[in-house]
Amino acid sequence: MVAQPSERHTDQLHEKLVALSRNAQVNVDLDDPADYWYRLGQRNAYAHALGLSVARGVDHKAFKVADRLSAALADGEHNVDFLLAGALEGAPSAAATPASLEWIGPQAFSAQYGHIPGVDRDYGMRWGERGDQRISWRAPLDASHGLLYAYDPLWAEYKVLGADVPRQAVEGAFTQALDTDVHMDVTAFAEVVRSQTVAQRPRPIEPIAPVRVIEP
Image 1 (cartoon, rainbow, N blue to C red):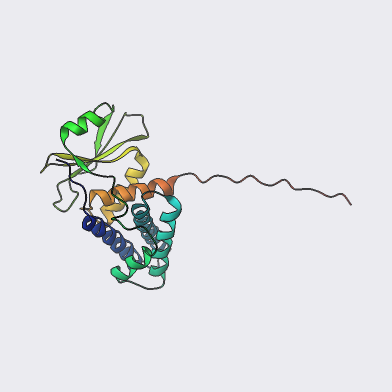
Image 2 (image 1 turned 30 degrees about the vertical axis):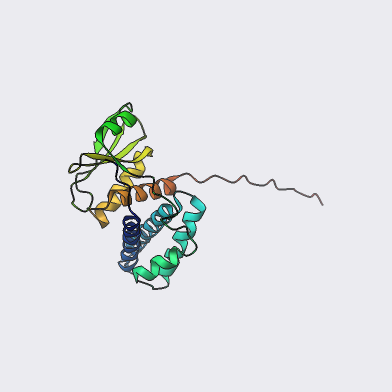
């Protein structure tokens, strides 16, 4: 059985990401520079995860959503409904942008991804509303990218969160989730991973324009 995420589920995910970003802002310790930058990093990561979810990975749209949320938080707004409405202003609705993640049965999972080699690295069986879903990353021992997926033991279903996911991004998302929500929804976890992936991409180095020297 394949279960498509409902529009309400997407709304709840967005509300959760806004709340996590808001909580990071509220918990900033202005007297501790290390904590200050750590919390702001958390705030911005969740804001960007919201943007990626809304924009379905389109970076420039995701940044606009994230910037609106971060700016509102910096201005002192803490109401989740107001924050979400402001961040999504002008963004496509969840109903207009169908979710790509879905739960699939073991046969479908094996048929589509069983050929991928590697060892499964488990990131706990604590995720989701029931706190029993497992998140795993499958890749050869020496690989830096692999298959990220979740498993629901109640329904014996799988949800692929990414087919070519950097391990470093998964580790970063795992650390962040343990610090903020140990039962995070697996789709929210995937958005944090995507945000980590974008944040960890090397920025291109712009070439230095040649300097023309004019002799006197």
